[in-house]
Image 1 (cartoon, helix red, strand yellow):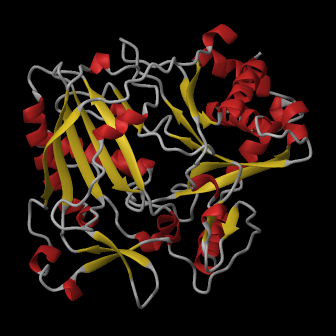
Image 2 (tube, rainbow, N blue to C red; image 1 turned 90 degrees about the vertical axis):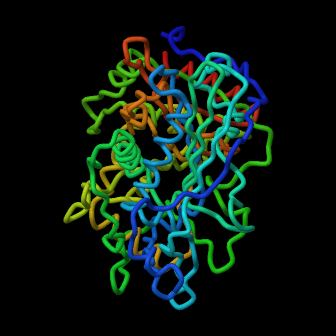
Length: 459
């Protein structure tokens, strides 16, 4: 079994020789209310941001790799993508807006002022098959997204920038930089489906719902549960308290641990116990395994130390009434599980899976509303030893563009040792995948311990 779980060799190009040819702003293809009033900022519509949105005030960078298509050379794709984005900015008006602090309410919001999104055309001096294993988190993939946002004026910061980079083979890469305040993973997938439809001259399959007041705090706020998974930073937060979201200054090694479908099924069998009542899913068993390995790789080891794992739970269907599936903002909260390291090392795997399962089960309507209300009263965010961020079944690679589905999609890796990513592997030649990739970044000594525990607990 251990031989089927492989690490990806880190044979990485450091410079992908990307040249920027054009960087410009794009605007809605049709007139909107704010196009009419963009000379009067007082008339610009503001988009309310929920307490979930406002915590996620950072950029998310994703890259989407496409094989060559003789009917769609990169120049044609660039034009179609640009036109589709301009159409999308009509339905997703906030993407062409700007973030601003409301001086009256003291809340972060998006002003829908029609200032536009960014669009970049670039080229790469390599073929797709020369840039390495797409599933391995090469930091050089950052060259496929645009860092500088000063397109028209100094200090301007668009909420969405798209970059298309053509490769020597005719393949190409589309990189998106979006503020996390605009989308969570599920709503970004919907955005991509809509964008692909527009690029095919079709109607959008989903009309986005923009009413983020659906996740507003209650009045008055009612915190009805203790929330040990939340860290209150007080009025003056310090970077030392920034927890899992803080970039590490340490040297980090990146590794991809691959679990096959057989590996996952064996973990599920291992998690079944007549004395334990838990929902044994692929996500729960993988998360329990990651939690155990991450907690025990901590140095120095201490069996009495408590470890808390955080993991995202979509609350759309858990609220009463449920959110519309087309909800375009962030509708994900962090569930948690806590245990002593001694339990994580010596306890049954079934018990760990049960704790992960219980954390998600806890996230009902009242618990979710309690967390949102907590955010109304406190300046803080989720805090734990490790956050598992799952992109495993978001389906970015299933988006059907006129030029075909992506060969692979992944985030640009960040220097954070306490966030572990779950991703599907590159699909096989028959279009199917096999298992899951677990992307880990840790200091070298901790990585060695993580690796040893990972293989040991698979047996």
